Length: 288
Image (tube, rainbow, N blue to C red):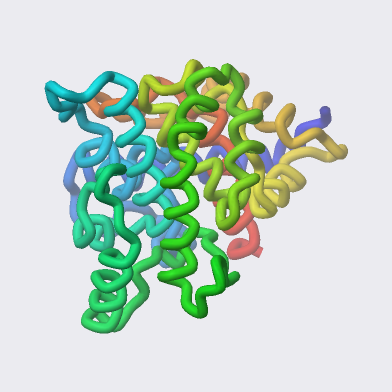
């Protein structure tokens, strides 16, 4: 493994600068601009840590909550949470989830949801899906529009939620579960990863999101910039995660780590490093 030191310096500059924007904006509550870097000022990049994203914070504070009723078992409640993770991440829009609300397994009805979502889309004049998320335009279940196609996907998940829950609960390996979720129609690699990261915040699984990560095309491109030789993507991401303190010290960067935020770590996790490498590839393209 042969790191490209110039690109490494640029990578950690990007990571430090993007996190500094979050810190100045949300912790210090300073007015814009939060950076002198023209690229970072004029273009959108996701947070360095996924837990800081608006949608993830909504998930943690509104879905990942303990409201187990007296007549529900521990497993029954966790199953409800798991199903709502699928519901939330397939649309990945806060206003969409707020419109349809918490979906109970017992009363889940795609006909009612179809009516609500089509009316919302027509009223708002915009998609009920987050366009940044990789839900495809492929039609599922013989449906001719995206809403009903993904309600069919959700209904398929709903019908098999007992098996999915049992599978995840007994698993020790994130990669194994990622391959399992990808076997369901409508759940691709990116979406499977996002769902599992949310699941890793629960007590359903025995692993956390620092165990393994999938790497998309953007991440693979970012990794190719950082090493002079051909490297295994997971080895490269683990190298970046494990040596982050060394590089930050060498380059005199002091990343402001969030405090008092549930599920935030004191370091950049493997899953977050994967996302950073993807965002870095965008930064390099814009810089060149």
